Image (tube, rainbow, N blue to C red; front, side, top):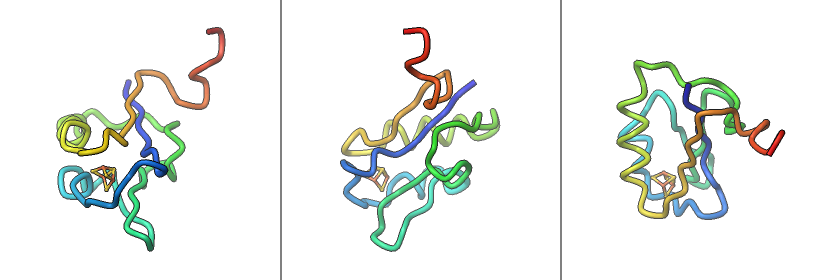
Length: 80
Ligand code: F3S
């Protein structure tokens, strides 16, 4: 499983993630990216077919704003 969201506080709206993974990332009116699959909640498992794109976006973000996790972000700290 793989979950993702964009830290919109550090995204500089460079546009690389949407180019690398157009089925995952879109931009708001300010050009700041978000995960379009779950409204940037990081709670929807990214389909396997999109994992290569996601990896490219993750590695290509100049500000490390794309966060990845094997568990949903809303349960990230449960039982920790
Ligand atoms: Fe922002 Fe990084 Fe995408 S800076 S637009 S999250 S590549």
